[in-house]
Length: 227
Image (cartoon, rainbow, N blue to C red; front, side, top):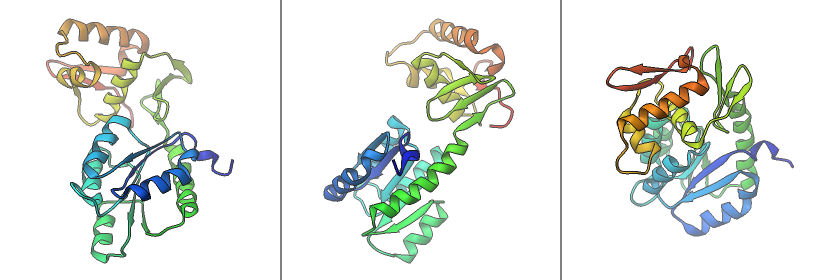
């Protein structure tokens, strides 16, 4: 397969024109692990939060929230997220704003889907090199599979434990509070402090105490060397 490197990627395509969205999805979606669509920037942010795509492709002019405003929000969540902007116009002012927001590429419509796939392949090679995250001298993390390794040995984590680890890494510059854990890891309205303590105890039994630190009265912080 020509674009084999794309097969593990999740793509979020944000476009308000349904026919364009369907055409691109039909043309390229088979190359990817998943190809998710959203109709405007507001839905794009929601789907980003729910699906954690590897790359976002977006039109500029959309109702509710345009592509540049959406990009601004996504950049605040993940400053390294690859974002590709599409536009029917070579609007210099919008192009400069897109550059200021740190977009990776700007395509003028109409464009050849083959050109997009070629660029995504180049981008995927860079992402693949960045896929393995060294947490500290003991642990590494695969951002695609959400798997944790200790000295190259896979640590078997439950779905909720993987979600917790992902949350810790996403919030690596701060800490994960008990309230955030309740909101992100459990659907139940009430989660007792005892249940959280039990969850943390089991997580530590699998990963050693050194992986996370307890910030007294505040929450948990990942013990990192260079992430």
